[in-house]
Length: 502
Ligand SMILES: [Zn+2]
Image (cartoon, rainbow, N blue to C red):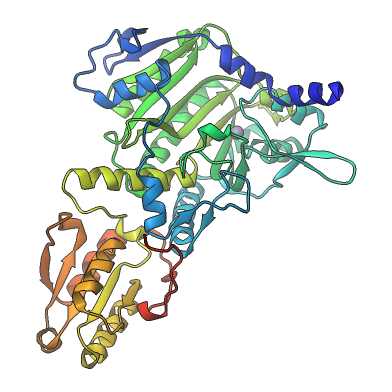
């Protein structure tokens, strides 16, 4: 029994323990390169005038004064259920969610988009196992360098841990590869479905903090610090473009946190400055006196949600330790074997977190008197056509066909209910375009279209558009993004209800 307890204790990584006791100094680094040292007095972060940067203040409060507890449930949790996207699953462990067709669709589109962009940047997509031998020497020692708790599964004779990132599979693969200096940087990419972290149950939070999540993870193996810095900046630009592509605004919707080991900072201030210049607003800089983890620096983009809490999304790290641990080598110009430096990038953060951020943002927009919605390319149903009576069905079908031919996802509300109710339900489902077809519309060439992006929560904006106008507008808004088929039945009468309406 005592032995078992001892065993349990050891499974909590050294890095996790270090993180809990870690002391560091905090600064604001402004766009001029000036450091402003921060401190906490009476639960308030002081040392910088945050007046023009309220979200940076919230981020600092979250990080330094540890204002992390949600007083109220963040709004995305109600929304993810109301929109029939995601729900809790009592039959699994907490933090392992179920995705309904709408949620699976949004997630799939995000997964495709992020993965395609990472491959365009030059990464090679791979796939690796989700569980690893607890006794493998390199893995065992790495476990203790990463601040995360893990699930353990048992087979007949051995214990395995479920991966909490893609590092394991990619490093074991890189160990077996023959890499020349001419190949560098070598970039490997995996979309981990899933990565697992056994977060404490009190910390679990809807789509924000889960125990099973989908993490796009891209490692770059680089020759030296110089190549590493150059590559990190290229990846920063990649992440920037991905976050904007997803539908968040930069730098408005994010705050940048940069963390350095002091010695590394003194030598590579140019890297910190290059990041701040790119971000184009002041950032929080955390400085560690000593190196506790395997990385000498890291940064992350933090989203500030409707409750004023920060959530790390994009992150990249400068890893100076693992190439040696996993014996990863390249042959340099002089013919000698050398260890590369490794960068660990998640170019979007967990896909579930992207969904969380989009829902929280939509809710915040609604408070500013804008109709809440998802970007048009991510909306499961882009347009809904509603015949007023059965005799308008034929015309509704004709329009639906023309739109479908242009790869637009169209629903037809064929139910025998009042058109007012049909419109109300389409709005509740955040459908971006709504068209009602009655006698007048059936005879006209232009249709009255309710455009959600231009509407207020209680006031619709309607424009007269031809089918061609609609196709042009939606194609423009979805250009360069993945396309997908409508994830539910085209006819609303054929759709089952996944989440009972309250
Ligand atoms: Zn990694």
